Image (tube, rainbow, N blue to C red):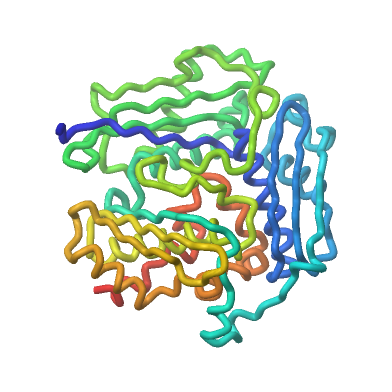
Length: 395
């Protein structure tokens, strides 16, 4: 078996149609939770052309339910020119279903004893995965980490008009050459940027601008560097005018690889955005990442995957499996036992211990910020599942 391989991961900017849908869905989640931390909410979105459809099912004491206004405000903040995607004039269709009468149960998790927390069971069957490795300071795989950095930089230069001819819709793919499971060199960077229809910028200027204002600044703190053989593909198909929903459709939850580990590690495939914190298929992914990250932060392994499986009607996960891929300082089963001792993996315990119901109100909107540049490794947002405070307890 060869020890060398190429691995690629993709990220997209905040104006990509799939990410527009993720942001709208999580903006709806934030809107409910800011009014009512006990809200149960599922919001899914689809967009194409000048039409957006939002399906919302909720159980809540919230009184402000202007879903259409939330969507228009989110679209407006993303910053498309009106002739490409008009936040004020696009058609927004909604299907809103109130389940409050049969499904609304306020719960003060902080006041509950252990027995009461144990009565809060999983309402979805799911297997979720968390992963961490020592390839970056954020303990994320290097390909997705760098792809997100470039995507963020693209949004910055577009938003502050350093490159005013760009639209906020771009795709970034980063390839690394690995040797013995360690990233050794940057194999390739491919970036496809979209331009305004009225732009007269030629392809060579576009490529020079992207390299100088986006890629080089994003690479400054990357230890693994480009070299003479690194392939730079900037719009390899040439100029691409027009983008966003007028060019391709979008759907909530379609970019699960981008949201998690860029395909480098397993993920459940379930959408993360558009779900309240009591959805185990969302918060289970967060607590699995928390567990894996603390294992690596504790020095127990160079890489770690944590698998949690939940069954409907049960609080405890029916399975907790740890894999360290031969990099562990301890047996994988022993690491799993230590995780069980220090982390409450029950749905109520996860939400209580990470404070997930309160973040929308405390931070003036939280979940929408996760909808672009990944849900994992977001140290700048101080997300609770990125904390490594329990690492010492695992040693």
